[in-house]
Image (cartoon, rainbow, N blue to C red; front, side, top):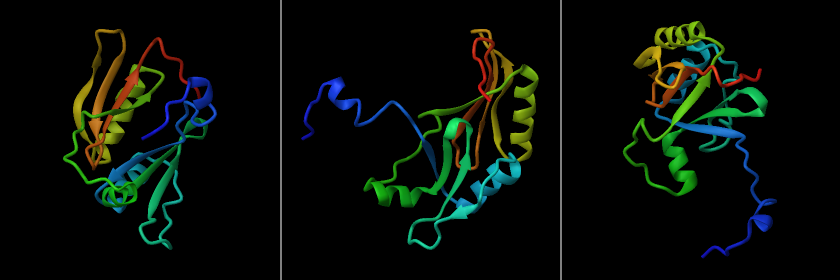
Length: 153
């Protein structure tokens, strides 16, 4: 059982920060092609192949964040958890852009790369404009323009 600690004691242990978002994928090559060739994201390609179960692809994002693609089976083995039936509604990945036109352009690029557009771009009740797509492994992305959200480059 874990020991209960106060927030003051816990803060040095785990700061509220995420450095890598890892997506479990069925086929590393297919997903790499989607993000690199289809969406144009920079990457060094698949690395770690010299280690058993180490093949992974990284994509640098803003502010030091990394997106990693890693085989689903290997995630299960590494974390000692069984694969479960996935649901695309468990979480979304948000990609905020500077205008409605940028939402349209990004979704067009994703569509041409092979994404499944699940929700074409449209005005939202809360004042923004967004649309959704699924990547080759059914990870759900929202491309959104929010007039209240400042984009950091």
